[in-house]
Length: 244
Ligand SMILES: [Mg+2]
Image 1 (cartoon, rainbow, N blue to C red):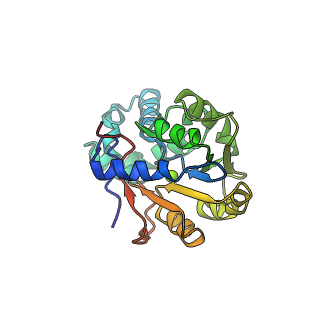
Image 2: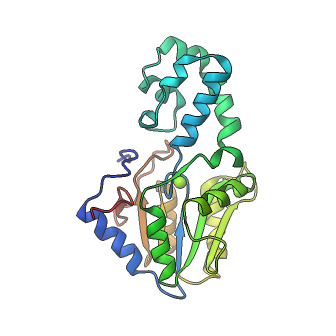
């Protein structure tokens, strides 16, 4: 089953209970690992910004139709069609849109347009305040580290403090899941992992296999089109926002 997409304010009592369970497992000596894109951060504002820049530069008014709710998967073609842009226009312009998106999306200059998921900074702060070591483990590469640090600070995540680490890919072309697998050893040096949150099914499955006793959580936003589903033992988190 695929994730249903971003729903940052779909709070429920079941969802609250899962947020509580994540906090309850945090304690001194333990490690809590959080993914960034599509997990602690909503990447859609970054993408809307990119579309609007290109719209303005090229005088392509069609691209102004694209709003956050039109991003339902990783296909820019689908996004443009969701926005009501005519198919013929999309067919003609998609390669150039994609090339511009690609140039911008994976950069420090644009990553700062992301918003923290509502409620996510409060959750991570609560985990950190209970004494756990917070690790931000991301598929962003070293070229995006400076913008990522700016974002973490701007939205009030624990960062530049004791017991916080940011792990980014050393090279852009490295596969995200292979990078995260290779980072597990480094994380193990910090202590046992009590919590792991990610929006990519392959990543949560890998982590659950390696750390069956930890609280692995699948964050339901968007994810890659790979036909992989989270294993059934893994709970799904709809959002970080609470009912009260
Ligand atoms: Mg992610």
